[in-house]
Length: 146
Image (cartoon, rainbow, N blue to C red; front, side, top):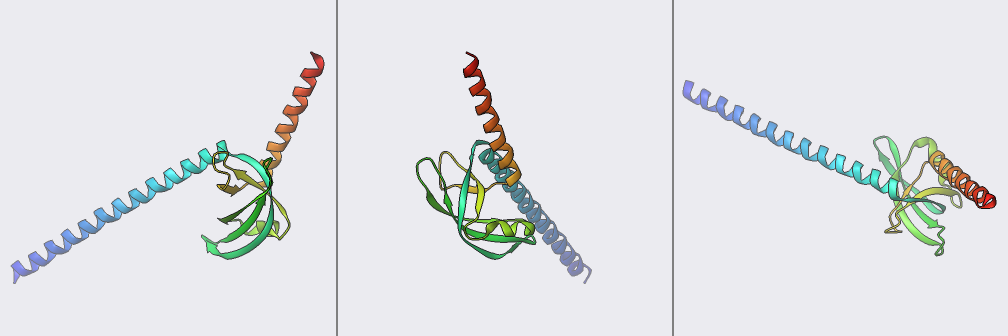
């Protein structure tokens, strides 16, 4: 009887240790994936251009981590001409009002793949536009002085 109990206890210990190793491996893999995704997103935002897009359609799909997940059809304004893209992205609940049909929103556009688009924070876009305007004015002043 004691041998059966010891065997059962050893089996339970082994099973628990195996499950703990698997949980650790899964959590480690998930963390590595999150870190890679964050790195890719950072690189995308650093290399992307900021542009304007008109909301053609917007639908809330549900919630992700208590934030609304929104599906958008956008018309991107581009020097090569306007084009449409579909985008699904979680947004802050306080930002839902920005995505009415016909509204203009700021977007990041990947210069290598114009279909790769992400929503841009309006404050970041405003700073970017101000910086571009300031640089253009500075260039103009330098040219005038030459």
